[in-house]
Image (tube, rainbow, N blue to C red; front, side, top):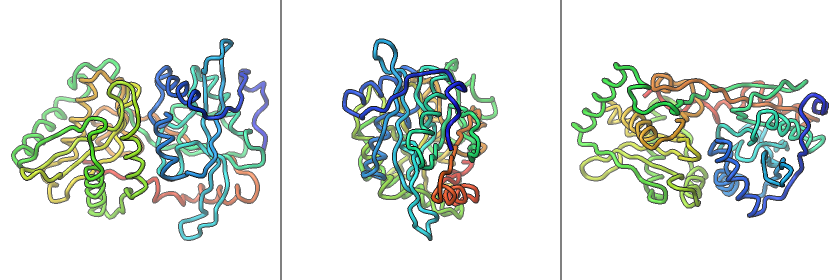
Length: 363
């Protein structure tokens, strides 16, 4: 399948570049300049590649202005995916760097305009002729229709904090009252809250929260998604270099003996906060530790002058109750050849349901 003709989109000079240290600096600057997501950043892609795809070749589609400044990029990877977890036949495809295993949201092209983002999208479709293209989680880009492509969307709530100076402007009176009640219950249970700034959370802290995440999910009949690879991703992110106070932020609720009973891990980057993973001890259900951590995290984002709070994928009611509005993520598969037909079957019948299922409870 060929991408639409050049006449269908504005003309941009798009080339393929090597991901050098100099390019990486430009890439990071572009994320900040256009208000991109953490998952479009070189810090995320490096951590993801180290843990999940160390052998995968990366390619950067780029657009530059007349002065040579980078104004758009779409970083892709040559990947494989099993037909099914019980049938590990590898299917080759071109995907978005940072997607697939250990996947994230908000992975679309980085660009100074929507027209340029669409041009990068079309360029990706033709970057490796004959190979299937699976472009996942393209928010905020709303990709144009492509003949023969499979398209699906996922709910991905975001709280716009750009004009919010206090939670009073974001939450109802009832929600604020309930939040105060939950915090009093946590204090009465002897729990105290702590934030770990970037670089402070140790591997033991991250492992502990991961174990709590799995324990909580098991009470809901789910397996939870936290393993050694995800731990390596978080460690690599924690060790990365960032501007100002950006990076991996972790909050915990600990009991009087210092044992972590609940935790939240998220990323602050380029004006946004991304709530990545939470977990809490099921024995503390009545204390509502998830509500305490999440509402405190949103308040911290407001106090820090951040412009948005990303709840990420999922339809849980608390995300909307706490100010989230759906900005869907779209995935597009352009199947080519026999491998493409198998990928299409995989996508159509939801073989990834266990990988991308909503993980958090309404708490």
